[in-house]
Length: 313
Image (cartoon, rainbow, N blue to C red; front, side):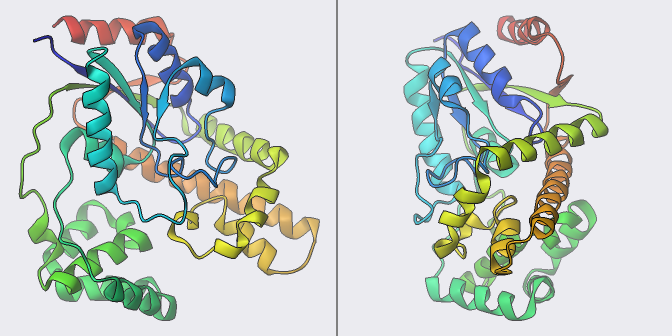
């Protein structure tokens, strides 16, 4: 049986992952699995930088705008669906491509996701309510109380995670819902994969990366992001919409003042928060084992040569 390979393209937002993935898909005659958790939802297009219709037509994509913001969709759900789709695609071609900036989702496909019990929805609602009242400090103190080992591990290795409300809510709800530390569920199983990952990282000097992000935000505004967000206001409290590019404009609309200066401030906030998001992506992806990093302007022939060497070895 021939070996199967999953070419995985990682890197920060606006670095050129989509363009490279399409070029490689054309070269190898294969398809693309997207693992950008912001692009799953069909109600969000402009603010999530979904590939254009032309890009989508030039290579087959999966897991782009295939869900609704009203659906509960977890990284565990994605793992199961993505692995099933890859099994199907590998029947046609032993090389496939995965691309995206959501590190947790990349890891779920490459290494597997830990099994957690179902959590009572009432517990989740109570934690959300307490977070709204008391903020991130409540979540941090709760995790410290319920799983001090995991709290200390995050403090030492991933302190930015302690500032991430969605991740912290998840840790706390597992502790409360199961009566066990979150860390007790981690690395309890070994997930077997029937493919070999070839991991390509794209990077750029910080100033270049920041300029690309700023330009992308300006393009989004010109393409109608304001209208897209305005249409989503009735659902602004949904988890899927708690993301950069949407939160800042919800706040702008909440002001009830049509002031170009306020809009300008909101756009600057989007740029700043996207730059911060990109920094967190880099921190996450730089820990990826066996990733080979290329400058975003690297000739694709050089990247293909690197891939081919791995496929032949």
